[in-house]
Length: 140
Image (cartoon, rainbow, N blue to C red; front, side):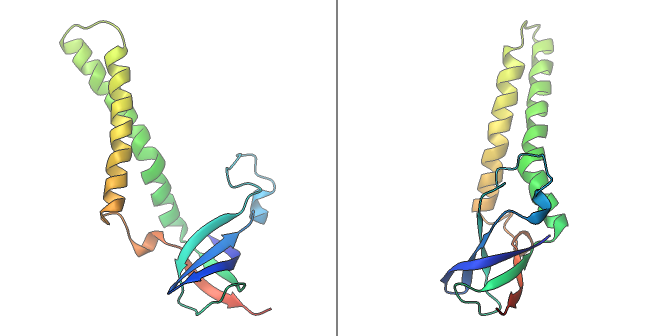
């Protein structure tokens, strides 16, 4: 996925790029939180850009999809696994009601977010492949 943005801040070898709504979003009905708003990202400055430069940034779609899977699907799967685990415990101990499966589903959901955050904070999931890269600087 490629997008064009403007450098709004420079700090050492990092640049902050501001993007506006992508033209491809105009017909979208998904209700994205970024629709009509600006988005900011930090990238490694390999091109020697300055504040005000117009640049093209790319993030490979497969890594974008991997990040989305990790952020959304893993917690969702954890939620259902927690519910199934609670249901099994209910059946083993002949408990009635859905309180335990529901409580465990939310516990597993919460724990999945904590584990993902911990792995990112410790650098185990941090990888340059998940970061957008500057492709080129446009001369205006």
